[in-house]
Length: 191
Image (cartoon, rainbow, N blue to C red):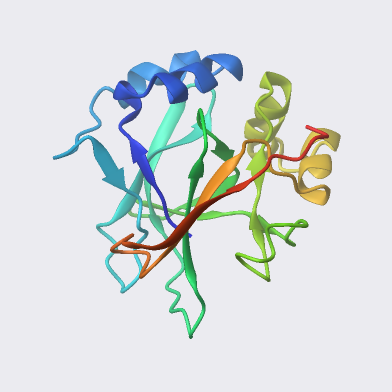
């Protein structure tokens, strides 16, 4: 799955979400974010291109890193879909690894798909995170504690969609050329 997102410094929705979950202190960390257009393509480093990184991956309440997507996957006849929030922004749980040379890699945490999502990806769903400051603090603290707390275990064991998603079938992830209608995958009611 890939997506397009505005630069954080230009996106009121992302800034509002960071405020909602108590991460306003990370906003200044995005000042150096650059783009040649008003959107950044987060197509990961498929094709063994480690220079294509996800920038500003939040790893604590006051720090971010740039990390190469560590999976090199090739679809085999599977349809491709572009998913983005219908309104606002969304949070996705990820793990990261620091290498001895100071560089980082990362991957989105996935869980078994929830009803409705399996039509777009039958094997997994990204670990979407709730728009809740307590949950986000627990998620970020889990790494420093070396163990999972009850809040993180609940998030991992109960995958949900917290934001309505617009889903469009595309020719390829890289081109994001739409070849289908936009469908809305509704957020779970029990947020």
